[in-house]
Length: 454
Image 1 (cartoon, rainbow, N blue to C red):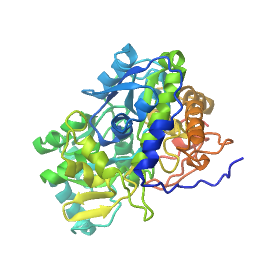
Image 2: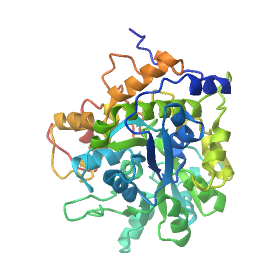
Image 3: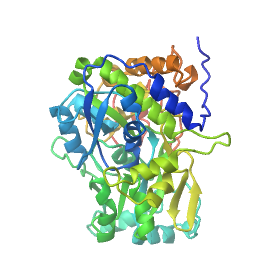
C-alpha cells in the first residue's frame, strides 16, 4: 500500500527523460490509431497540443490531428456525431450533456486537463467606478483578492435606472459561468436564474450574463457590448496588453485549485475503443507532467517552449508574450500590477489530472443552484451521476502502465484506496465549506440560489 500522504513531485528538467519515454512506451493494441481531437483556442488546451507536438501520442501508436473549433457547442456536437473522436471540453459539458441540459448525450472523461486558468476582467470605466467605491483599489498594486463588493453599487445604480449591466461568460455550463456567478453572489449581486422558460438565465438577475466565444471577449469589452467578462487565457491578458480592461480576480481566488477543462469522449466511443482511450490517457498524463516539470529551484522549465507552440496560428494564435504572461507563473492585473501566480495554470501537480468524483458533483450543485437542473434531486443522484461520467479506472490503468515504464511514480496519483472525493475545503472567496459527499448541504449553504430539502 502506498503512503496516503499526497506529495508534489519535483520533476526532472532533463529532456532525455522524456525522449526515453518515447522509445520505451508499451504500445497497446489500440482499436483506432488515426484520431481527430477538437479544441478551443485557449491555453488550457495545452496537454492535447503538447501530447501531439512532443510525440507522446505517437509513442502510444496514435496519429492525432488536433483541430480548432469555433465554439463550445459546435465542439460538443462534433464529438457526438463522430466528426471528432474526442475533445478539450469545459468540465461542465460532459455532465450537462449526460443529464440532458442542452444537448443530450452520454459523455465521459478519464482525464482532467488542468486547474485554474480563468479570470474576471472589467472595463476601464467599471474599474474606475470600483476604485471610487473602495479607496483600497486606488493603487497601482491594490490588495488581492478583490471581491465584487465595490461593483455592487454600480450594478444597483444601473438597475435603478432601468438597465442591467451586460457581462460575458463563454458557455452556460462553463466553469466561467459558475465562477462569475459565485463571485457576484458572494457580494450579494444576483446573477439571475435559469428556468424552464428562461434558458438565458436572466430571471431575477441584477445583471445580464450572456455567452460570448473566448477570442471575442476583448472586442466586446472595447465596444461596450460587455462591461465585464470571465474567460480563460490569453484573453484577460490581452485586455491588459491592449489597455481596455482590468482583470480583478482569478478563479484561483474564487476557488483555489478548481478543475477547469477535461478531455471528453462519448460513452459509446469509450466502449468501442477501450485500449485506445487508455493510450490517449497515457499520452495526456505525460504531456501534463511535461508541462509542470520544474528544476531543483522549483522553476517551470518547459513553459516557454509550450508558449511558443501554443502561439502558433493553428493552436491558440495569440502573441507569445501574451500567452507567456500567465503560463510562466506570473499574471498582470494591470500593467503596473504584475504578480507571481505559480499555480495560475496547473496541468499535473496536486493530482489534478485524476478524474475526481467530487469535481463533477460541484458542477452539479451549481447547475441546481442556478436552475439549470429544474427539480430537487436526492444526494444519491449527485454521486451516481458523477460516477457515470468520470472514469478513474481508465486513468489508473494508464498511470499504472506509466509507472511500469518509468514515466511516473506511484506518488504521482492518488493511493489505491482513494474513493474519488477530495477532502472538504473552504478555499473559496466567501469561505463556504465544500464537501463533495454532502452536495445538498453545500447547495443550501449559499444565500442566493435554489435550496433543497436534505
